[in-house]
Length: 219
Image (cartoon, rainbow, N blue to C red; front, top):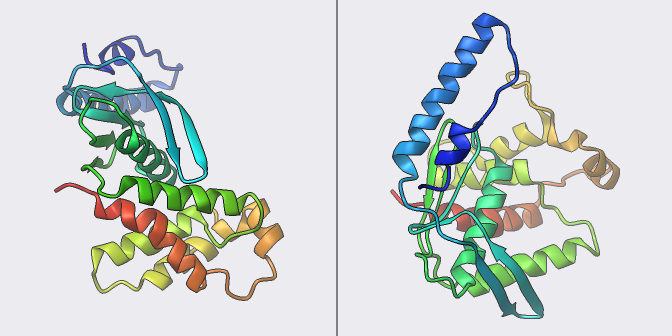
């Protein structure tokens, strides 16, 4: 069996109005077909992660593994938080001794992201661990939603301005219902009086996390 076949088969949904329920049912069925056609590799048992990276010792379990690598999904549009989860788990797989291919895939309702083997994964992971440790001791200019917009717009190499794209996520837009990231309680508390939180440090951290991840996309 594949990793998700039994989960799809056993899923139960809450009661909805008939019209809304029919729409939701069609969306779920369409997503299930996408999963079935994409995540075809057989599931394998979780592997142990036990590795020393710089001054950090990582111990845990690598879950959601298949014969093709790591596989994850969420029935929703691809969001920065999904990228965070995918990227960290992909790096963990790449630095592990697991025998499965060091590749990862994430299926969202609006996209399918595949990541190839990351060269220098240990160095990349160590940089993120140091960033995490620094963030435990002082405020850093890393705002995931705005950072992803900056890195993603840069990665596309189109005419759009990465800084303006990040500012729209940070400050909000009349064309979007998304809550401005600056209104997050902790962001407002720590950076509410900062004239320019999306500064050069922000740009460097956005690339360090999301920029490197986006460069690993296959296809």
